[in-house]
Length: 128
Ligand SMILES: Nc1nc2c([nH]c(=O)n2[C@@H]2O[C@H](COP(=O)(O)OP(=O)(O)OP(=O)(O)O)[C@@H](O)[C@H]2O)c(=O)[nH]1
Ligand SMILES: [Mg+2]
Image (tube, rainbow, N blue to C red):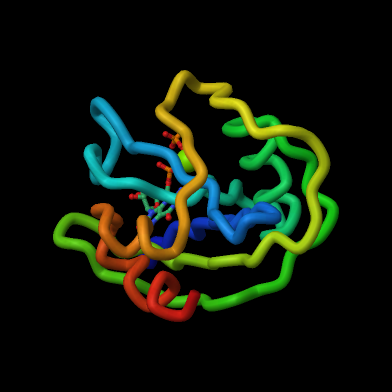
């Protein structure tokens, strides 16, 4: 039986100083020790923007008011294949907070380029 590739929605949230919101993957998570943009798995039947709004609320307490698709790609990691959907967040309300206790920070593009991210993020980070 064919298994659907897991859809992942990811939000690039930028502040007025051109910094991006990132957090650290930890513990037992896939790719622990890498930094990431907030996001996660879309549920079955959930559209991508709804999934992105839900993930931003759950992980960093932001209310999404606008987003534009930046890049979508299917990426084969050693242990899994994911369909990644990167969105540029064009509007949000609230102040970010680490709702899951994760290290969370704003980072300039220069800082992003010096930090470890999943391989799948390379093209998106290069495009910033
Ligand atoms: N959030 C996020 N995930 C990324 C990025 N880049 C990347 O390869 N991923 C991968 O995409 C998947 C995201 O799923 P997730 O672990 O965040 O899922 P989730 O928030 O629904 O959490 P859960 O399944 O632990 O409840 C992970 O396998 C992660 O390694 C990124 O920039 N942000
Ligand atoms: Mg997540």
